[in-house]
Length: 105
Image (cartoon, rainbow, N blue to C red; front, top):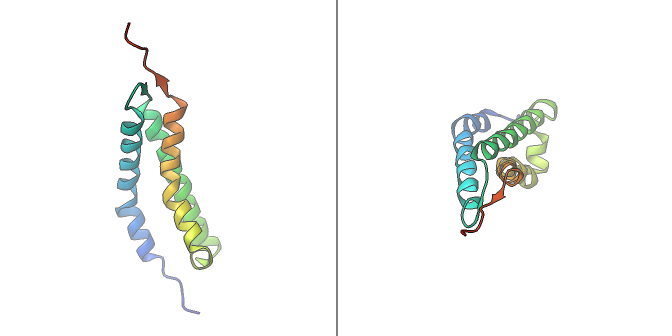
């Protein structure tokens, strides 16, 4: 069995993943604010960052404790969870502060 090398994962994590997380928060807020409802952008961003942190902790735990085994055995499931966590956090953060605009009188 060949040795697992984490360098490409770490580079992707520090270069592209934070930008995608920020874009996720902005998109969830913009889409959620259409129509007759509004939510807090800061709550959306905060929960997005929590989702980002959860996925980073999962990545570090997999790399450190399981020696990358979860990447090989559960690659599809791990990838989905890793990339979906910030977006799920954004949706939760927006919906916690969602309010409906009053109808015009």
